[in-house]
Length: 124
Image (cartoon, rainbow, N blue to C red):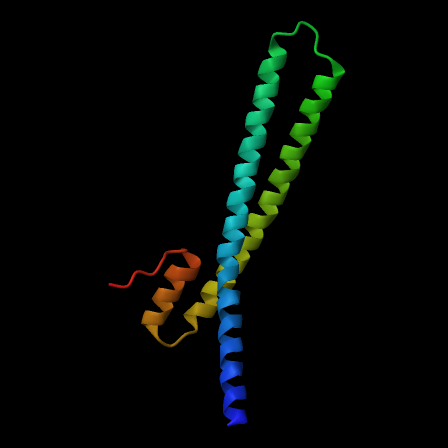
């Protein structure tokens, strides 16, 4: 009986590991989406600061420093985004290759749609 419990526990752990492996694509995509939103917010902030300073005849160095700081942060985030997109594409290709090794074509399609296209499964 004890061996059977251990065997079932190993199956559950293995199943969870597979699921976590496949869900890496989704997590990476969500991280990319978050970075894109953050970059857009920072750009809006930079534009609004620029608009506030337009009416001033002489820009103070403080305003220029704030603008330069924001622009540097945007560039940092854009570099991070580029790296994350590259990682995402590599990870997605790896997961797709793994899914393609499954013998059951229906399971391949379901797994691809669920984990690579991030579609929800709907049962009728």
